[in-house]
Image 1: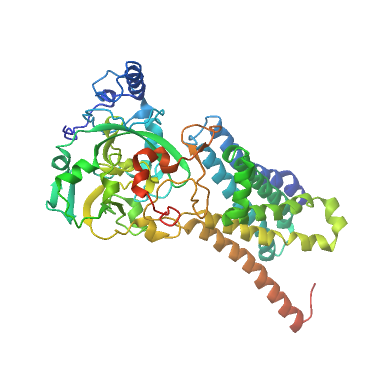
Image 2: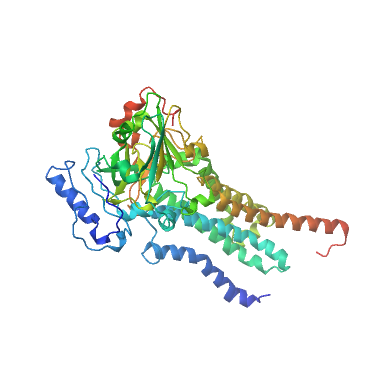
Length: 323
Length: 209
């Protein structure tokens, strides 16, 4: 599947949430969920200014996924207005307000390190062989709030195989773009930029790990990590690094930004774990974003509820030590 | 210098309105006027009530240095109102935490207060303000006499704890809490400076009361 060139399209062409939900409901009733729903199939839509996606372009989404949750996704407005993306500012509303100058195209990604195929690739070529799936994932932030996001992305494992990592590749490191002129938060230098993250090879190859290119059938908004970001739903949100420009295969555990900033508070693994509290707050429960003043807090699930898929990765590991 | 009448019928009502304005503004936003509270309104309430507590505590502590600077006693007449408003916002902050944030999960609330230093510090700060609010009336003031002044010195540790509470809950950039810490240092420093000078005047020359 190919992402269309970033021709700006009329917001009214984008599948609105109501249609999105209607379609999911239809497919669920028909027992077809996950068997090839076509997002962005050009439904006529009423304009909804609350969803004004600006210059977002439509994505060709090939299929749904058995890994999607049945939980009701948050609105696009919630997803686009409540973000932690320090490159644009510290406040949750800063990324939406201050990311207007960011140019997600043209974009290239560099692959280097312990792999047979390395180099710098145009984003379109980088992702071209891979079908874009819809993955409706729970997102749990380390700050004890959560959302449900209908990502559109490609399986990270499939992409990694294309570059033929060598036997010495034990970890995959990721790096965010540095563009202080377009990213006002980088000019303040609150964190050591570039933002860097990493996974073990096994984590990266897990079928839950994706590189997201869109949400709700449109290309990623700047504040959500345009044009390409990682999504690892069993880990706290800060692991899911945004606006990626480099992927490196390494033999040693790569440094990760929040771990460097506060090693006692943020570990390399950062798996969602209700039993290991953040030193300054409890991780036992989470607030669901978008439920207003009286939404009940939910108990947080081990591995954010993805234990069936990922618990085996950590067998025999003391998750209190490797937090 | 404002006259008694001006203070009572003009300045005090004005300060009263100014102190209720943040609450009124939040209230309007809650019922849908003004900018939306966003996808996590409980967090916005928590932050707004918290920051106004600290701002009003600093305003309360600014009255004495203002008296020194002006050489007039009238700023002191605003101190009780400002202090009680600070306490009111602190109470709203804590009530929002208990009701909307933790939803009366007493086990978690207790764990928070006992195990999480930044919450412990904020809670102790609030507890220190309780006796001050209770004894803020004229009746208590005369009943306690000199001890009233000693008791009300608790506002200093309380404000220090509130600053600390703010500083410790920040994930990274501590610029904003440090600005408030700086203001607090200025306000406390002004007292020290004034008292020192006062002491020197006392030892070196005749006092003029």
